Image (cartoon, rainbow, N blue to C red; front, side, top):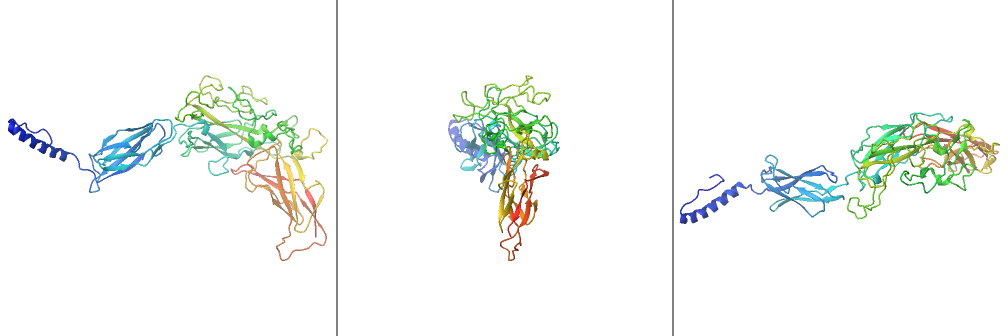
Length: 535
């Protein structure tokens, strides 16, 4: 008899007997209609593998019969292994598929905090457990948004702050390249893949080298190149540890700390040991009449922009912003050409046009901070890099020049006294030190592990580098150091003696690499050191 209703028995005595038989028969038939228990229950997969808060992830489980085949029609129940706030599971019960033996459920984390959950699938005593499903933060945050140029600590890192962009005549060398990396992450530090990042620059050109969409670890790489327009020519300023930070000012320092503005003085070569007065270095340009050079003339502002939340302090750890919690209010994104921390409708140096900005709210004007926390907004971050050049002969005249306005960019420090004859003993050596800056009182770009001073000798001496490698910070000058050594090897079996002292001269060539990306090399001659070597 097929599964269904049994015929009704009329007589009362027969009815009692028939009822018992009916129940027994019906029970057998119902048991026959229910599939047998699966031999095993297994976890199949999860999609997506890295869900974010608010996203749905699907978990699939498979029932396997005693023959090792997928078993259809099995009713599976789902539950979380331990209660987790904000986690929803739906459905809580499903039947395995007729062809694959798979039953699935979906999990979503609606809370504002990172959550992790384990889902259990059951068929009576049979059980399968999923791996831990972790939901990362949902959106990018300004606190985790970084933008830096040049990889010095591995792929995706930053730290190259200067590139060689001018020759000794202040002529632009176009096409000097530098890779810049924006990193987008949520408030828990998890990189966000697929985020769209846009870029604006004060000078040169910047555009996607591959894509301006973040990769699987949250990095978006772009290629920056020197080109027109040039950086804005700005007036010398005064550094402050307390820059303006109000409704229209960002609170950024006048110059990044890697420029050492806390050691600024008007003539840093003459007053290299201080005292410092925070006044930006400056000097009349000896080959361009009427021009005054200062470090920020070639400080280029670049910004990266994406969509996300303003940074806030989650004091009660509930994963969402609550009224009264501290937050960082952002202005609309803008390119700060003159480094004063606010948008300007008129640019310095006679340049036409206002500073570039992004009209986030579409009202046709630049807006400062709105005084409220924005969970969804345009967030942005600034990077600044230096364009440097190398000195012309007129930049390196004797600092004792009669002109009181003249300020040299090169100064010999040792050996002392400078400009006199020095003796090196047998197997001896002599330390040489000098200060060098570019025509704007910036350290020259130094972007190769091999950069430093060597060669350039006459006589039985050689030069060994002391200051060498990649520069990480860029003060108003670089202290270059090298050693002048007797070429004779004390470990050799045959060491010649000289009948009389032999004169020597060293004008070491100091190499500076313009960029880590196929950058050209510039060689600047160190101040002349001379003497003789003892027999």
